[in-house]
Image 1 (cartoon, one colour):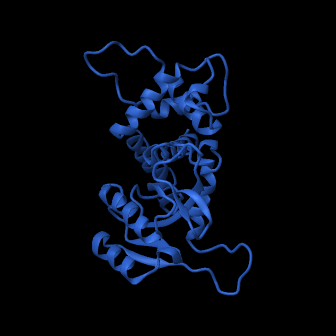
Image 2 (tube, rainbow, N blue to C red):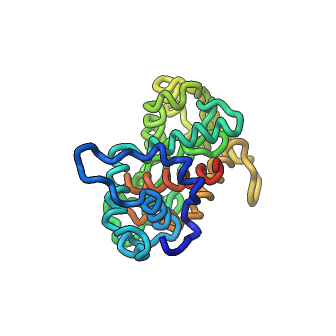
Length: 263
């Protein structure tokens, strides 16, 4: 690499996650590309928001970088790295690796003009694009995320993302309480969470007759996480053709945050 970019991982940060990177496949040609440079290229895409073909020339070829990004999305490598770092971060904060409380919320973002799949209109926020359903622990670390069309309702999307959280039972074995806002309120949704997930739903509503910003118990944590994501230009708007790619970039943003903290 001939130039240091602000999005690059330091050597200490890279060494922290290098053991989580899959080895080259047996029987094939020896891996020649520098994995440190590949990760730096992917984080450059994330932070600077450029197209894959616009990668600077001192990174590996964009086709090589994209192939690693795509293959690791499909085989679950990114999710494995993310979950491992989340456990390490919780331990660093003297917390149990498995959280006992979680917060869920959604964020609607505009989609780029060339995006046509899974796009809808959020009538409440007057946004045409996609909706991000996020579940986080009390530190603001992401448990699971789901990207859908913006027209998907809170309870419908909430059930889907909570199913993903529940399926990662080794990560949430201690989870008992789920904090939500008024959009997820409703007897049917609460009953579903108790029957399917065995969790208690706590609704936090905005006080009546209040104006301006109000710090809401527990709910502010997930709002802060949404704010962290806005530090990455690739996530300010949804540019991805597939919702799964959008989800991967969200996990990548959290990976970058956690590895910088731990290192």
